[in-house]
Figure 1 (cartoon, rainbow over the protein chains, first blue to last red):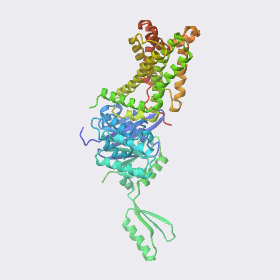
Figure 2 (tube, rainbow over the protein chains, first blue to last red; figure 1 turned 120 degrees about the vertical axis):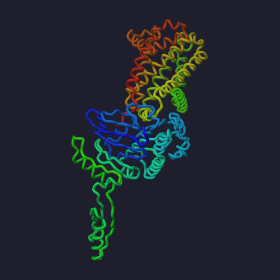
Figure 3 (tube, rainbow over the protein chains, first blue to last red; figure 1 turned 90 degrees about the vertical axis):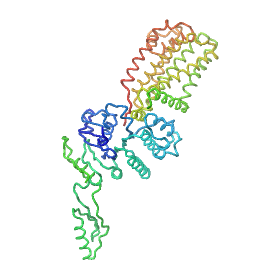
Figure 4 (cartoon, chains in turn orange, yellow; figure 1 turned 90 degrees about the horizontal axis):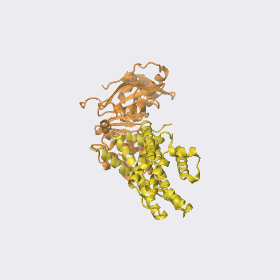
Length: 303
Length: 250
């Protein structure tokens, strides 16, 4: 398998639990070295999808390839090359982070240096504290550290910063950015829009077990190709106008304002954020969610 | 490249380390059987005939508590805390994980049996075991069977909070029924005796008694060995078939 082959390929993936269809035909392809985000509300099928890729669950139908392996076969070779941060994974209460990492490192053929991983995860000060004495945030860092100690090429992060305060979240983002710089491929699930926007090279917006849109976060909003110009009008009301040609609109607005002596308070020009796209798409899906899978979805490719 | 045997050893070392760091586990493993022995010794003091029965009974109970009870607790705890799921996502071979866990249980059992044999010798004037081979065979088969049953039973326990209730609901009746029908003179009803003989603990105590006290050889306890082994096969089948790496998420 060449290095240009995608790290993850998923096509027409379906997962059914009894009568409930958690995943209804997902197609994604994650390139090597890419940070790919699965973004969606709770219950969208993100964790089910990721746990199929990690080898925890069997799929009902569809094709899945992770680093060239079928994860359902649960081969040890594949598990040597991936790192998994579960949504909620525990650790032994009576061992320290250093001991846990030293133990975990032995599972892998070419592990990273334990001290280096402790530092990368921000656990140097707590390295020799029993894990039952660690805080929730410190345990989450240990989750990261345990997933990284085997020096995996592909890392799964399932809602890695849920429950973090803003400071801890930004620290975790820095860790993830440094992983990308090392050339790792990362599949990230999150329901935080800023997280997807801050980290992911590409994002798939998932709802009700389907992909609604896929593309780089900045370009996802470009589907409608609009700029948004906002200002306070002379009555003090916040006004928003959408346009494909912001230059002309600004010229018009500022011309009128100068002529009438008005000030365009709080004038701003923006592009729809991922949040706007997300809210629009997930609201659409609510309105039109039907039994058929093959709904058209928005494709955005990098220019 | 780490091989499965090395990893089994590493897992065993980690289990031992965790065992000694958990004071309550160490207490239940080593102090409790000694307390039982001491209490029984006081009650039965001077009655060598009953003391001879007490020591193998406590030894049998110890095998059950270090394997069945300890493993049911541990597996449920690790499952509900998500530790098993995390381990499942690593390249640690399943056989190495369970090999390390089982070797840890075997070590605890061996330590307990040693303590009980020494205490029986020092406190109750019971001689050294008469049949070492029989002792080892019964302890080994007992460990494998009861450990497998403990892992299998963990599957029936829905959450960690209810573990004590589930485990004691099995452990205590089995211990009582196996202890009380030990001596014919207590005149237990026939059906209780039948139940006790069919459960794994009473045959284990019989075998240990033969090895440690009465000197009746392995050949006179073959039927007891078969009963324990059959429980072992049943336990292994359920342990493997029903094993769950993940807790029930609310």
